Length: 141
Figure 1: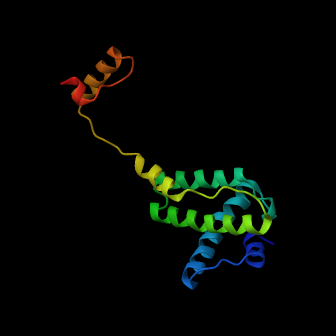
Figure 2: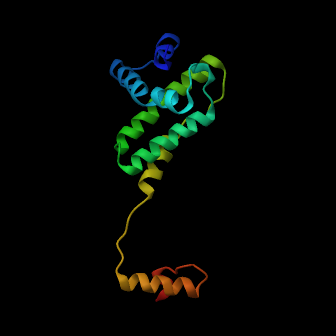
Figure 3: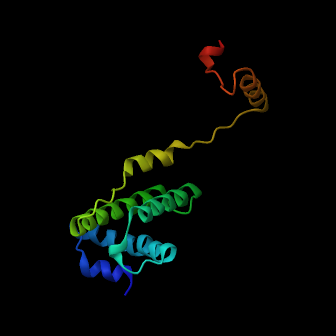
């Protein structure tokens, strides 16, 4: 029996009907296959924090590469967070739930900027002069 079948038999997610269906679909498509492939997990009760952390980084990496959208990653983490809450209640464990707003901030934190060749050379000069630190524009003027 797969992890998803164990989940369906042992746990019941509460909430509006459409949200419950969406959470089950997300867990079936992303979370349980990842645990089965990466950790060869056969029993849902053997879930631990390392597995959850690995899944979080897996989703973060896929969002950064552009394989899945940021909103899909967010929905996925919310669904797993709901599952973790149920898991902790049923088994008396203390697995940490995902901090989804922090995930969103992490994803949005990386921004690419374009710099001219002259600006790049100036930055290299400043770094040589100031032990690797580049002063702000206010400090320069």
